[in-house]
Length: 182
Image (cartoon, rainbow, N blue to C red):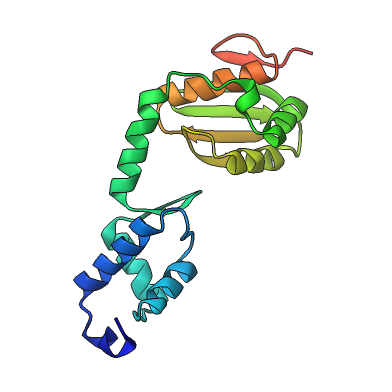
């Protein structure tokens, strides 16, 4: 497609082009600037507000690995739910996350699909960043304060697996409320 045809492109055609790009380049497009550039290379010039509206209308989700179409998210989600009962081994946690969990975590608790991680004062942001970079299956987001991290998990079984894995990584006891033993 060339730039001269851009004015003639319908919203449906633009949505189709966005879907094609996101499907063919899964994980490569992580922000609107990159998507806007990829569209421009295809001869589609679109303003950022229009692109933002298009993404919302199409139902595109943004995660730690970039943009996903709802259908891609559903297939990823169903694969994760099939393996959710298998706990991670401590050795499978990335080194940086193992180190920060062992150094700073003082307590781990769970409420349904939320895992609450308590840290030493002023350490929560550092540990949460390590969780974000680790991109562990089942964790869909983190929120950190000064000494508390909320790990939002996709499901209660995911949260249980994450809590159990973290508790074993730092030698904590009690399955429902793990507190560091020193």
